[in-house]
Length: 430
Image 1: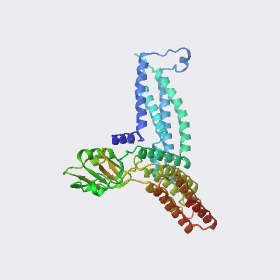
Image 2: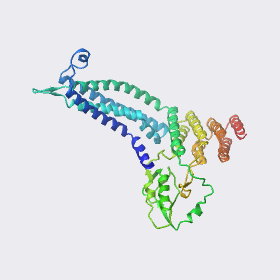
Image 3: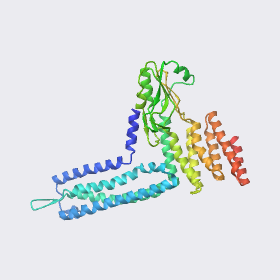
Image 4: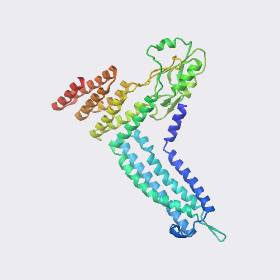
């Protein structure tokens, strides 16, 4: 069930889904309006006479003008989108392009213009004028005119949105929001298992007579593993899975990523049925990927070609907020049991130390000789430490603070900058 839910979410988040849906709705509306025009007649009196009183030739002219304008503006919208993507790719990195492509307003605007074009074509095809009879779909033309007027306002909204969306602060804020959503999906909705601290994995393995290697069937990044399905299947057949890879890891076809243990000789196809692998990393179960997107922006901002430390500071601030939130969450357990408390799956799992490393290691490594960034990083670590709930979290934070201090002592040329950072380090350790 979770795998089907994931596939549905991936489909609905694809760039083509919303535009295709809007175009389909436009075709349905066009057919419906033609039916209405066939069974009713607009009276050329009163206010209605001011809307459209033309002949079939005038109807064709109006519809042709609207359709030509809409497909032209659709091309402009597409061009603007490509320019925004080019700027985003050069400044923030190509891996963020999917974030821009999946923004709903971009899909809606492009789909609406194409839908209006398709609608007018369908209506235009029904306009008839001959010696026997003529047909002018007046209500349908009225809808086309209203759609054209509405699309003018939509273009203004789109241009404003593009201008705002490529600003660094907004890009980082959007990634931070996506990261919060990922935390909700990966950590809040995780299944709660019985106390597994006393379970010894090697002892559990010795209970099974047979073992086979777990092999993946394709090359790519692991997007999703349906652990609930694996646990239920293993419980039914009295099996055990040991998985040494997690969502976000890269695997090669026929690579062994674990072992399957059973009492009887049987096939373990259920594992591959519970795993989704794709060519790009996704955020469905991969908390680290959203963090690395923000880290990439910070690292590029610190490069000599861009030299934008303010963007790096913004990334550190947002990472500080995320990690402060994560201190209060329980990360997925490596040991996963069934309803009877029997260990059924042992899988590699991300923990707080791994998230902290992913957040700050690369930024620190690229911030050598940049006092403002290292000082802000130390301040962020102090903020996170104030939210820490366990001693293990504090130990990891102390380790990162020490690495920041050591780098500052090696790379700062100004003694006052170093003194400023050392004062903050002393406060951090108190």
